[in-house]
Length: 463
Image 1 (cartoon, rainbow, N blue to C red):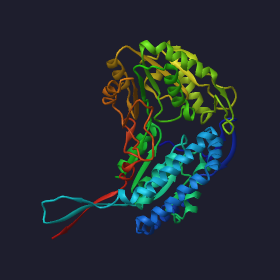
Image 2: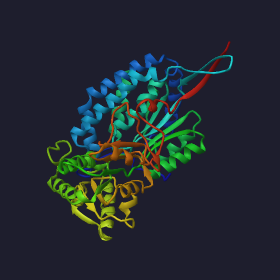
Image 3: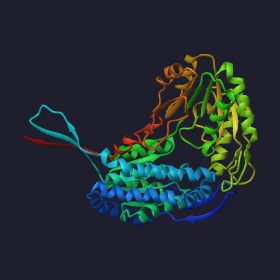
Image 4: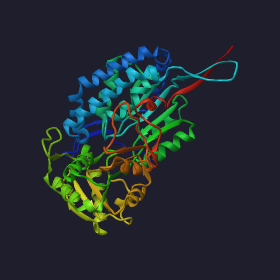
């Protein structure tokens, strides 16, 4: 992993480009102290009853709810999330953490295994020790909640390395768990450098690592974890297909697709990055999207208002997205609306509608992590399925049709970790999240989210 710059963690308001606050990197001594505290805390935390741990984690869930407006203001300033979406994210984080506090004891209950051997066999689900979480900026609370919630209930302890652009979010989460009663060392925020991340992964006290981030970061962290013989859960990029075979209400179908695409300013791993639309409704669908794109105006993420969009997470992110779109346009794609990068240092990029994307364009194979709706025209269900699976990613996908069976026939064959019929995505604390192919491996949320960093120990008692 490349050496991190010396500037440290910093809050840069993407609406203005202004550096608001800076935080120094953790020293090597502070990293070692965090590792020692995590191991010491595990010896206490992991030995408590799961009911006792769940009660503490439930209090953390309540604090996410109580502090949701404060958390939303932090996210708006750090990465440009519209205020109401930040509130929703904090509420969902509360629901996730609370879900594991409520259901965790049942998820790890002993499971008896029928056996012909002369005795009784059960599978026990036990904690394994300190874990490292490496989390991204796009959902600064939700991503942490779905990793830390189940593992704290299980009895593991957590070192959390957040994105370098989200130090206030990172500290706010740490404070929530501390105020909830999680003991010192059981949840520790570290402002680690890339080199220090490698050191942490190699440390024998760390038993596993979870990363949500880019394909490139996943390859690096996965390699480091493998070399150190540590389990890894990787939730990486996506280029999710969103197949519309027909519709009685194209206006509504377009509105749903558009709202899904520009949520979080298009910066979601599992958003509908490739809209695949049947030719007989294609023109009307694109026309509706274009009207929606032309109607939105830039706004302060703290006061977003109706029909508005906020900045992307950073000026660099907006410039990278613009380069992908301009590459497509230069090679013959059609930009129907939007696609304008703001002048100056801000990260505003007007939501765009793009058609005519072909395999020789970057936009065909690369993930467009921003507010760009790419729409493809197809002439048959078979062509729609082939295009849907023609990607190195495999996170999620959705298929829409008036005839549910018709939609299911395509959804059943999607090469993804999450397939949806007649809805953009099934979402909830109880529904597992994760992908296949280059979108990573492992699952978070639901019962499966508590079944990753676990000692599934056979316990056999002879008669």
